[in-house]
Amino acid sequence: MSRTRSVSIARDSVVPSKHQGKTSKTRWAEQIPAYLFLLPALVLFGLFAWYPMINSVIMSFQSVKLNGEDKFVGFDNYVRMFQNPNFGLSWLNSLQFALLSIVIGFIVPIAVAIGVNEMRRSKGFFRLVFFLPNLIPVVIYLLVWRLIYASDGGFLNSFLGTFGVEPQLWLQNPATVKIAVVVILTWANFGGTMLIYLAALGDLSPDLYEAAEIDGASITQRIWHITVPYLRTTMKLLLVLQFLTVVQLFTEPFLLTSGGPANNTLTPVLSIYRIAFTDNDFGLASAWSVTLVIFLAIFSAIYLRLSRSEAGD
Amino acid sequence: METFDRGIISKIELTTMGGRVRYYVILGVLFVMALLFFFPIYFAFVGGMFNSTELFKPGIHLWPDNPQWQNFWNSIVKYNLLKQFLNTFIIVGGGVLLQMTVSTLAAYSLARLKPIAGKYIQFGLLITLLIPQIAYIIPLYRTLVNVPVLNISLVGSYWGLWLPYSLSAFAILVLKDAFQKIPIELFDAAKIEGASAWDIFLKFTLPLSRSILAVLSILAFVNLWKDFLLPFLVLQRTVDMQPITVRLWEITRYEPLNLQMAASFVAIIPPVLIAIILQRFILRGVSIGAVKG
Image 1 (cartoon, rainbow over the protein chains, first blue to last red):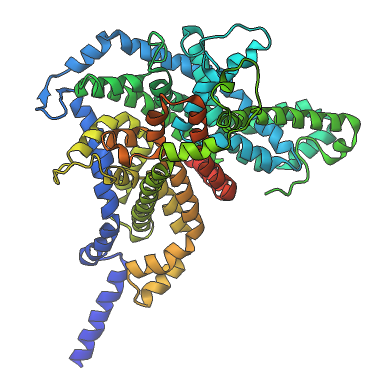
Image 2 (image 1 turned 180 degrees about the horizontal axis):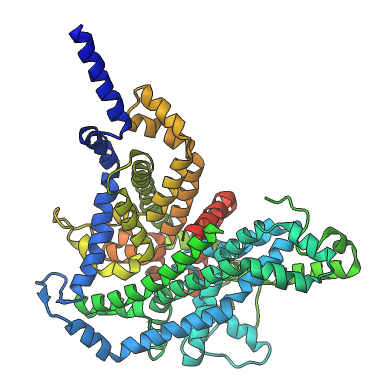
């Protein structure tokens, strides 16, 4: 009698505890597999992302040599950074690159996406052709573009030569080098951008166009009053993304122009690379990196906010 | 995807003269633009077939007088391109495999095992999405030169690329969403049957997520294939291990231009083939990426 009672009590005490959400004991037992599954990611992110990120901030206050002793130097690196004329210059270059890339490469993918979306039969073909450059590694397309821009025997000069235009030093002339680089950037990133716009256009209900047409709206009016407003959030998102991409510009100036002519294509990341690996001044390079992170984080936060609000729509 | 009744221009308008003219003008403009975009690839192709004097002749040459088809094979042999392709595939293949392993495990835990502090871990992951690798490449390189705790150097080793490549907060977050969409009843039923978390993960979480895994793998493949700076730094002194994307620049720098073009064209072929074969997956990947960042 007393035995059955104790069993039923025991059972009673077990059942609610399962419902109430775990005594601390069972909860910890469940945590073991949870963290075993997470372990590889935590270790790897710790070592190769979080630790370097924190280290970047610490190093920016230190005098660091690759194999030497680290020494705390306060704001010394930041003072040297602001005193360096290349600091302002590379950010100014970055800004010019960004503005040029927006002038040259922001509107065109939108227009092309709207056009491609209209195509009844050749959509897949256009999507593929415009997207191909996105898949080619930067080094390989730079080899090709270098020959297109070459002053001697380059395609661009030969082409313009048939119209009587004098051969130009596209990559050696401060007046043309930024545009030349931005043209490459636009070519290389166009397809991805266009696909994103196409995906957005795919979600736009044709009923809206139907209704507008019945109301007598012309094709231009339909684009202006339906398509463009519909794409507005995507546009904002991609504008920020384009800014973020261009500010990180490195490989093109590194390989194609070595930052020249006369530092005209010197970008923040190229400066960081040189300070770190040519001058071996890791502390100063870290101060530059922290500045870059702050800048990128602000823009990424804007991007994330926009993409959240888009997902919410 | 391709079924659609109308765009901005309606079917009826397409039967009218004005509508048709507009449609074909758009088609024409797009076609010209497509030619312009395809031109650098074509240029690598024909440039590779010129002989060295023809390349410098003034005027526009869109086809060589005397195509040197053997240039392609010569560039493969001379620059040892097959070895570089192999290196690329070892680096990228290992990177993708590790990334998928690490990401699926972490995503499964975050989606279903309710780790304490899971919110904070996700926040930590989100931070790595906000701050691109290039911003902390110097301390990262320093970490690779001397890994803390272990005190080993990963520079000059494929692990120096595989391990950093295995991190993808993007993949983890996308997979977590995918795992959460699998009906929870399935998990509960399996649990009652006595299946362990590992069994559940292996026997039906992964198989049910095959398509998203394929999309993420291909996306990772393309991204890692295109990476330049990290392999350039890590494998700087071990040139035999360098992928084609790093080696080709150095090796062809002072070589005849036509062979440079031939080598570039050979290097373009694999990604282009991948694009054509796996178009659907890449398209899906790009559209996921658009929303998630």
